[in-house]
Image (cartoon, rainbow over all chains, first blue to last red; front, side, top):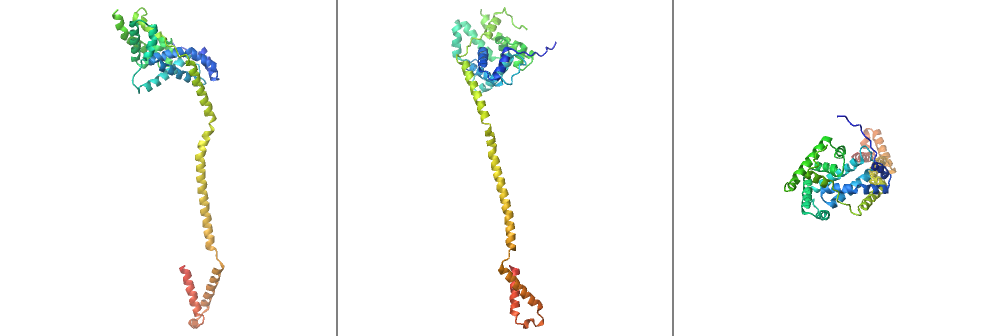
Length: 189
Length: 140
């Protein structure tokens, strides 16, 4: 297998980081607007709570703001921001390990139910939600980064600081687990 | 690398659920983030402004150490002064002492000059007084 030459990618968001480091508040606001939905949804699927997801997204943006002066565009910005997100997530897992498991926010489900009217769909949603939370941390992060955020395997490996083969294994195992958990809903059909 | 069958309804559902980004941020989310960054900037400015306080923090123990050192040096100097003064005081002989020394010397010279008729001389009493004085001087 040929080793890919190290690519230095200067995407738009990486360029924004320089402006943020120089104190450009407007550029930072634009960057927040651009990434907030993706980060909040990533955290929401990870922790299962809307308020916590917003808090984690906010902390990630603050980390991004603090690190602007040190930022170097070695990889993609996408990989970088999800590296920060992942660190925040680990931090929240450490904190939440000291409190009872409470990852389902009923108000979130009410909001979701506005779009999903059928009972069966709601049940699948709930089963999926629980199945996702049963996944080991790295499997969950990897499959969300791939399917929800559209990161490449290389970017996921960078964000999770692991090898490409490990990422592929985690994603495969995660999908197998999710399939197993949702299987019952489709067998009865 | 494809690991899922897109024709399979379970896989399709999983894909749909995973890629769902239904949660929308609160309307004031960006403002909250910006307000938090303002706080960070303010804290950074504050910490830069209060950097001299680091010197103050170290200045206090240093001043205390200096005070202790100065006190120690002063005590040592006083001790030396005291020793010198004491030595000077010990060697300081006033007029009365000189008179006494002369008297003793005089008495001793008489004693030295005396011969066999020592006990017959009139100055026997003086000699005894001289010896007595010498004895007392040795004792003191």
